[in-house]
Image (tube, rainbow, N blue to C red; front, side):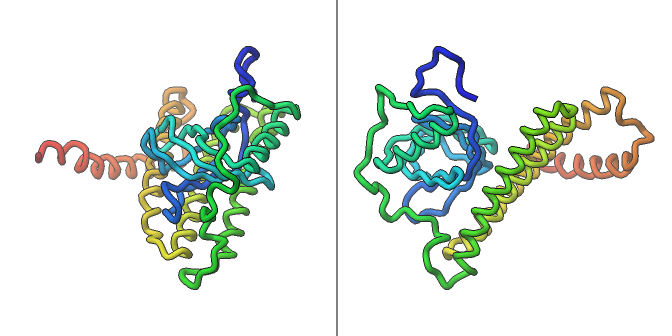
Length: 269
């Protein structure tokens, strides 16, 4: 949704779904994320693999059938959640694509701004191309990697549209929340899989992705723990709920493992 009336049109942000690839430099391993909102001056990317504030990156946005490439700076960084990017440079063609995408989102073809972004020379990133479209003989098929990335993006967009439909149909908010969490977990895991294939294909170290999966599991565990605690407080989960005994045993084992790291480890020091 656009921002409330009164904000500068050039700064209006619109909810937008799509895939994002980010790199610290040309040829560096990619970081994948999911586009959350978009404006003429920046965007927010949901990703487990966050970067420090101030980092300069190369980015590539995939929205529907449009691809926008350029340079950006990390303005905000929320650990294991996402990044807020400010666009620093866009080529003229990419600027035009961005304005076209926003015109579709806003329903208006008039998105001119009195404070245009700094334009880079034509084709500012000549060698910035995803590894998935470069020929390679290592680690699998580049074509398969590109197709997988496109398919993941399309599937996530369809699931996001389905979630919006649930809201419109006034489905119980608890069901929508459960669906949203499941899609979030799927999105993060799917992008980790794509990143693993990309690195394996381009000759990088695919095992760099594993910490992302571990961080995602902890993120989901925190959410699930919060929800189950709320169910216990409301009385919807009782001693007669199916599987409650197994959960108790698993939680006890988890507690012992965490205690060794968080508490006993500190005391040993």
